[in-house]
Amino acid sequence: MVMEPVHGGLLADLTEDAAVVLKNLDPECSQASWAMRWGMSRKQIQVVLSGMSDRAQLADNVKTFSEGRTLNEDEESALKEAAQIQYRKVAVPCTSCRYCTPNCPMDLDIPVLLRAYNDAKIGGEWRLTGLTALPKEKLPENCIGCGACTQYCPQSFDIPGYMRELKEMMERLAG
Image 1 (spheres, helix red, strand yellow):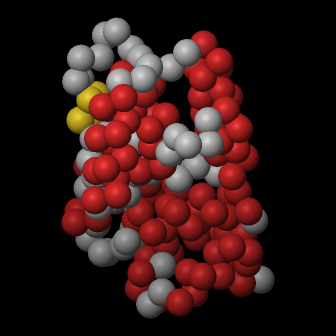
Image 2 (cartoon, one colour; image 1 turned 180 degrees about the vertical axis):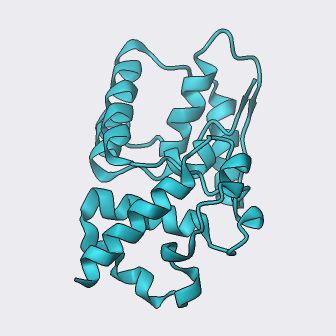
Image 3 (tube, one colour; image 1 turned 90 degrees about the vertical axis):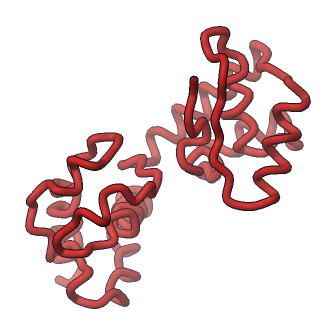
C-alpha cells in the first residue's frame, strides 16, 4: 500500500528543470499523474491512497487510474532523471503535513519556514527577505531547539537544526 504517492503535493509542483523532462516526453500528463503511474507500475503495490485538495485533483486522479497506463521503459528513465534533478534542488522535502506545528511551544509555522529555507538554498539567501513580513515572534530565531516538532515529523527531519541554520542565514542577510 502506498499513501500519498504525490508526497503531499511536492511531486505535483516540480522545479522547472525537473518538470520539463516529463513534459518533453508527454505534455498531456500532469506532474501528479507521473507519481501515480509510478506506483501503478510496481507489482508489489496493490493499493494507492492519494490525498486530494480540490475537484481538479480528483478529476486528474480518476483520469490517471481509469486509463491504468503503467510506465514504459522510456518513461521510467525520464521519471528517474526528473527525480534526480528534483532531489538536487530541494534541501528539505517537507510535505507541509503540519504534524509538527501544534507541538511547537513557540507556535512557529514550521512548514512556512522550511519552504523559505528551501527557497534560500536553491535561489540564494536574498529570498529570505519575505520572512521579514512575519511577526518577530514567528521567526526562526525563536526556535528553542527543544525537538518537540521532530518527534511528530513523519520524515524525522532535524527541524531545530534547520531553524538554527535559517536563523544564521537571516543574520547574514541582515548584515
